[in-house]
View (cartoon, rainbow, N blue to C red):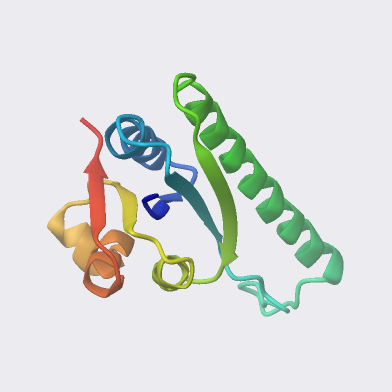
Length: 158
């Protein structure tokens, strides 16, 4: 009887912490198990503005908005390339990869994607913020631990 595919979702961003979490996931959750795993890489772009006012109250032109959208797309591609370089280092492991790019508030997009895509485990890196910074800014990983519909593993870089 064949085992069902196990989906490991890793939320990645521009940070070293998320790339470490990806590497950790491959080493600890995928490399030493059967090949019936899928690694889902999720990158979340900030929400795009239809229009936006700057501090002086000017509406940004369509050219400015297009430039920001282009930058956001290029950043997503760059992050995925960095992630690809990490999983290619594990040449002894044939990894089934799915790349997903979402747009919106990171914590909501991550939890919704984990549910929609049927993730068995969600892995996130920790930025290592202290209590006060987390209390003021909020923490995406804290939110996901409390709201994701699957187990969440927070990986802290040594």
